[in-house]
Length: 340
Image 1 (cartoon, rainbow, N blue to C red):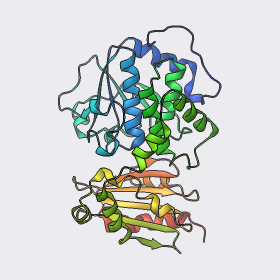
Image 2 (cartoon, helix red, strand yellow):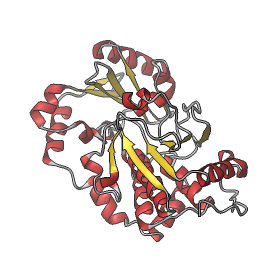
Image 3 (spheres, helix red, strand yellow):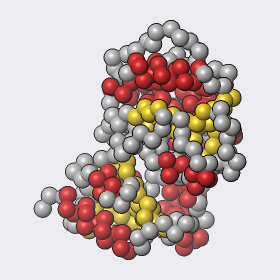
Image 4 (cartoon, rainbow, N blue to C red):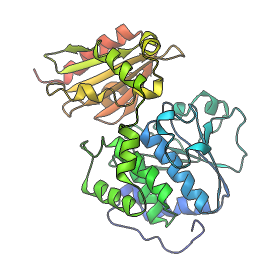
């Protein structure tokens, strides 16, 4: 299917990013290569893993040789995804020169990890949905109107008639489900729900996948949640809420870093909270911040101040600033955008 040179079944439902010429360029580039490497960002979430594995499985079903890597390897929380056993930590040895590198769901090539940076090679293809993505590859398909990179990939796979097996569908469904907060976030559209239905038709089981994502946690995650709930902060008439993750919290709870996914949503459940954020000191000494907005505040703009990025309603950053200093700066910048 990747070698099909027939006219593209272009749909007017696609955004301008999905022009026939752009899709034809991707089809022709992939048809000329037999070997591929698919990679996504550090601290991968459901969309990163689902997009990585979904694309890799589709390429493999088309007869391609595909390597799947991530700087953090395969997180236990998403090991249920089809093809997860094939994803490995990024190897220090660079891939062969003829292996096409495709980055998915990654707005900044630095977030592909230090090992990837040591390869001294940029991705050949960049597929993403973050508005802050500058287009760092030779071929870039970036649709900021899509709520998940997995949705972008569904449009690509169906337009180019690439394989959409049940395993591919399951991965893409999880990518969309997790990045839309179970289809609750503002960027969820009728098209998103239509695509979810098509993925179910292709073999994704919504009940099993939701249970694996949201009802299969270890007890250690709940113990970490208890730590978090005991360390909440509120400001600006309870319109700003945040917490910090510390090494002591991990030690007391026994939880791991990949079990923090979704904890920030408990702050967003408070009716008055306009912006929620979390802080965490990383092993490399950097401080990580993740921000979520209800709609009034543009958190992408705030994160861009520190060299971060993302979306208007969900963004993140990494900085050398001390957590206490960053905490005050974030609270002040958020307050500037809130109505009096």
